Structure formats: structure tokens, C-alpha cells
Length: 398
Image 1 (cartoon, rainbow, N blue to C red):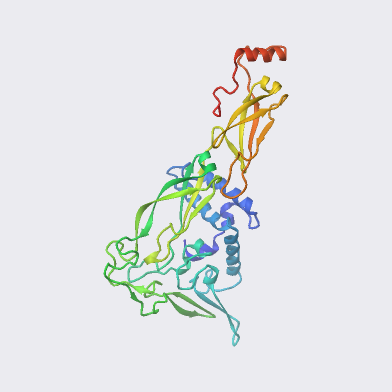
Image 2 (image 1 turned 30 degrees about the horizontal axis):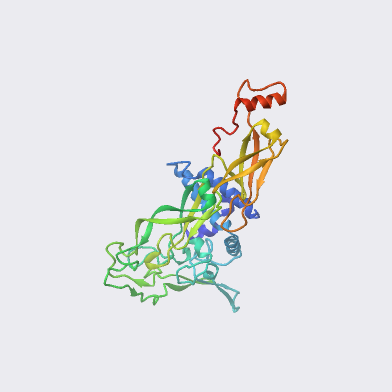
């Protein structure tokens, strides 16, 4: 994706929501689209995989309130007439911009990198630069190799599927990610072991040069070193000067207790390695939660349906039911009705942050075997007792 595409791209449209949509509506839209297009549900479907990446990228920006605010500000700035954001003014080169106030008038100057958490020549290390993955510090080539300039590595997206109870209680899971990583031979410098890159004479190591075009003055990556600030005369034979090689890395991801389906975990600095030792990007892990045969959830409340017989509803009884970490006995009051909810406080989902929910058991009357019913309700109950009918026989929660 080109630099201007990042500014021109409408992340709200990618998620099918309006610019004024609430964070809750954005979250709902993302979950729906991510579930519909997830690669696990469409193996081998390149279009579905591309759509999943598209909505994930959009949600990474507008799904976070602070990033969304900065994204909106950048788009507004692009539309306000500052040069270099679109097709005019020589392109969006990154660095320091000036907007002239007319002949003889003072010029207003600003550093575009201030919006993105980094200096004009330095690698991105946080802020909105995390979204664009060092977009504003890339050049066309370096040291004659035509490689990406010294820039923060790209963010990586992956996913993991866990069971309902593992998501509720939290557990570590192992994942494998194949992506460009720091070259072990040169330790990311890009230079052959025993040699070091030399400072670029054109930019004196800054990585960018200043240029004027019409009323605008701005900086751009140095054409000599491609923005790296250094030139490699003797490249590393393993990575050929890039400082990175593609390999598979294994990580242990701690699934936080109470995580919901579709939520993402960020592993800072575990993404794609930066070019020639620049900071690595981040790894984003989307967590998908499988359905459980007994439990479901409503916020932090744990839900289950409890099978009971007609006599148990009328006379009342005590029943042992499962929890996430054991069992608890609940009392069915006399003359209860089908659909009545029994609540046990504090035995729901205990999230990593926040208050624990309750366990809510909904009573469901189970029909007896054929021929066990009687015309009289009392006789029917007695006959049912005598038959040895067990309403919870075969129930997964028994």
C-alpha cells in the first residue's frame, strides 16, 4: 500500500460504519465481518483472507479511541491544504513541511512526524507510527540494493482458537509465526561480520535531505542511502544487507482470563523485524473462542440451562451443577416454573480486570419417557418418581 493510500483509505467504509459510529458499533461490525471472513472458515479462499486482513487493519485504527482520534485528525489535515498528502505538492514524503503564507509573508512550518510518534529521520517507536508501521521513514533503496530504508518493522496479524473454558479462566497457548526476523549472522546490521556500515556522505547520516517545490518545502529520504543514513559496502551474505531473514518463531501467548471472542492481544516488538536494526513491529493475535456444550456467557455472567423434572419444580429440590472450576449446589424453590433463573453470585467469569460475574442457571423441564404421564398431576408426579426418570441423564453438566 502506498503512502497516500494510508491517508486516502476510509477505514470506516472498510467496516461498513459511519464516521460518527460509536466504539461499540465499530466493535460489533468488526466481529461480524471478522467471523464471516476468517481464514479458518474459508481455507484456501484468498478473497476471504484479504477481506479479513482489511477489516483487521481498519479495526486496529478506528477500534482504538486514541488511534481513531489521530487518524481523523490526519485525514482532516490532508483535506485542509497541507502539501504532500495527496497528489499535489510532490507526494507525501514524510518529514518537515511548510505552508507558505504568500509573497513576503511568514511560512507556517510543522513536522508531520509529530503526529506519528517519531522524528523525521528516526525510526518509529510508538504513537500513530505503530499504525502505519514506519510508513513515513521508508526510502526507495539503500546501498545500491534497492531495499527498504531504515524503518520500523511491519505489524503482523495472526489468530488462535481456544476453548470456552480456557478463554474464561485464561491460559498460555503456543503460536508459530513465520515472518522477517533479525538476521542471526549480522545481528541486524546488514553488514558482513567484521565490517560496519559507513555514514552516508550525502545526508551526513540523517537519512533525509531537504527539497523545495513551488511554495512547499519538505524533506525526503536521501536518494544515496535510501533513508538509512548509512551505506553498506560489504553486505551480509545471509540477509544481503537487509538485516532480516524469514524464519518461523514460536511464542507463548498468555490468554487473559475472561477474554471475549474477537478480541486482540498485542505483543509489542514481536512483529516483523525492522530494516537494518530498526525497531520491530508488533504482533497482533486475534482470539477466537469455541462454543461450549454447557456454558455460554452474557458479559461476565456464566449461563447454563439446568434440566429438571416436573416433580422437582413442584416440590423443590437441590441440584449439583458445574462451574468453571468445580461444582456448586443450588436449591430449586417449590412451585418454580420453567424458565426460572437461579443466580449464584461470584461464580461466573472472573476477568483479569473487573468484577466477577454470576452463575445463572435457567430451569428447563424435561419431558418424561412415553407412557409415564398420568391424567392427574399428583399421580403423574408419583408415577414419574416410581419410574426412576432422571431429567439430567446424559446432560453434559451432570
